[in-house]
Length: 169
Image (cartoon, rainbow, N blue to C red; front, side, top):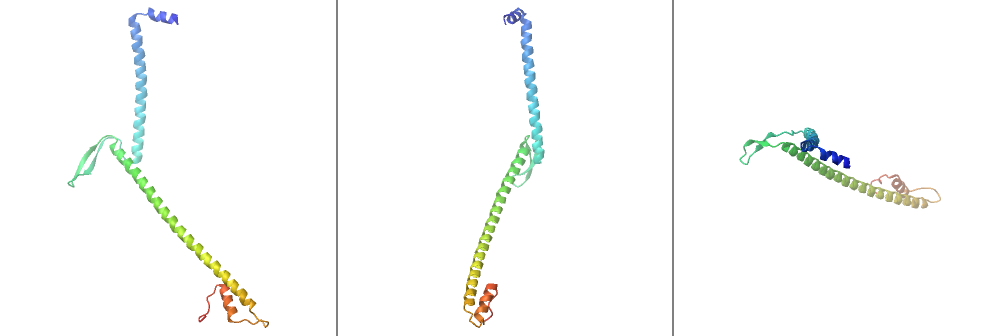
């Protein structure tokens, strides 16, 4: 270390100043190059996003309706039209998702109502089938020794089969 400092202190002040200025210039050049590359990357990204959104990144003009009803041309700064378009697309997506959720919730409620109605109908059918089976058992138990059946037995058979009773019953 002592040799290095000895060598630096032995240099002429002009060379030392030139060396410091050259190092500072090299550092600033490297930093400027990095900054320029980042700026170019952000610009390409902005152009890509804006073109995907269907708008221009550059400054432009657009038509606007004034309070008096006349249509005028207004100027927009760079990125302003793109930002408006992206906000409009984001709003559209949010509204679409909200409406879709409402529609799906309504369809789910309608499906649940139909399922409950079907379950109630199935319960009523099962109860009617049990009652018809019990009625048929009672009608079978009421058959005499001569194995002759009457109208009650046929009515119970119709109930078990799910048929409507004859008129007048």
